[in-house]
Length: 321
Image 1: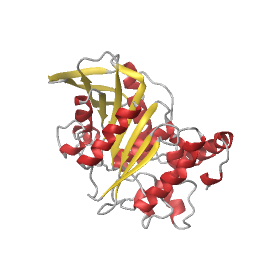
Image 2: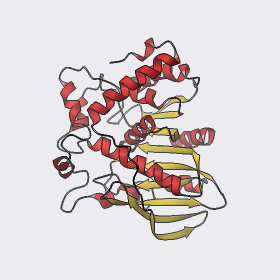
Image 3: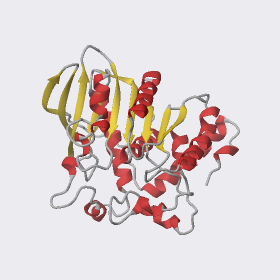
Image 4: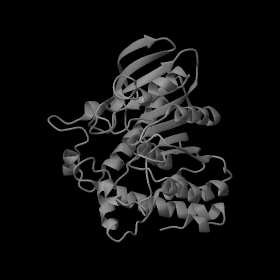
């Protein structure tokens, strides 16, 4: 595993980043960046005070068309865009849209009210993408057809397609695109920021703990729930992982990234682990001339996004987008 603290110059990072990306791709499986014809269509739209909410659909690959909520604020010719990744809730995109679930997770609605164009798609196995007669996040059918892949890689590619959707929305300033997520949404936001340089600001809440110090690293490949990264099991027994979360954070550099984590009462309540990942990745941010573009915020309110944490996220986007 690469020791980021030993990097001495930006040129060192150029070579090391390629090594890290190769390691991540080996574990996640195929990550296609092939462009496709999205064929974005608006199904319906409803006007609200300050914004319009559209239900759209588009292709994420050559076969599957998915639906998403697109929010367009009033009064701006070109506004920043924020991709809102939903947490592991069966409602999928409806929760960030404010239609179901926890109202504190209604990121798409919240940021539209603040003047951002927002997009909230369904992840595979959630919302409208739950397979008939299966439960939400049941990935058996996916792995039957894609034994060498991972749901994590599929979600990453699908979120890249969501950024392509932003590129087709005339009201979006393509140079100012952010991403936010909580839980599974934070996991997806961080991977997207690591692999797609169109992301100019990322906020990730309660999304990870380092593999190396995780008391239950097999959580990433549970067979009784969302099987995110099957190949991680190859390294669990030895405890020697080819990369860790500081490497994912470093891959996103120098894009501004805010890590929010619970300090207690959460599956990922391991602040020392998260702080260590941030501290190690900060070396790369400093080398690239962006020492203030990686930050950490902790709270004591469990696995949730608190009003105070949301205010911090708001300030982050206002600062960087």
